Length: 184
Ligand code: GLN
Figure (cartoon, rainbow, N blue to C red):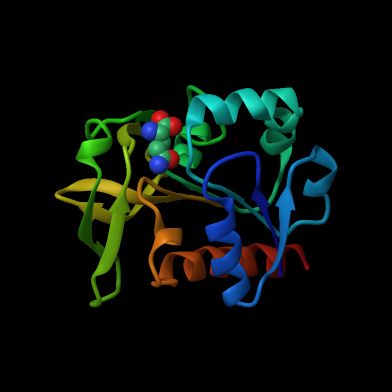
């Protein structure tokens, strides 16, 4: 599987390393042409304002909007995909909703259909304010959705690329596998 990781800013190296560990062929995407032929795309965490600015500068905003494959956004990557930014997901997300840098924290999450807790690393994390009916909750923290899926989109308000636990990336690759088999 050929997976692109937007490499404009933020945690792209960690995502790339984790995807390679899981056997994916990873492309660091800095130009719109590099989206061609990808089976999936990761929009990493970082800083959403900077992210949007750089995406516009390189024409990647339009290119990501028209990318038809599965997309996985983490933290700032989730903000970028919401109604108020690229508008590809039926979500409204509040930035820095858990407070400032000092409010960054880790917590055990319950992943739907899995007994083993998932360690979530939250760094100035966004919070989902509103979501459409077809957005499915995959994991919650204190009753709040922190991992969500809408069709070909998967978003996390935390940073699964910063732990050794590969389950969220595996989930994304499963989504990519399903989409690829539908196309084939
Ligand atoms: N607070 C950042 C933002 O608003 C997101 C933080 C992150 O990606 N770790 O874009």
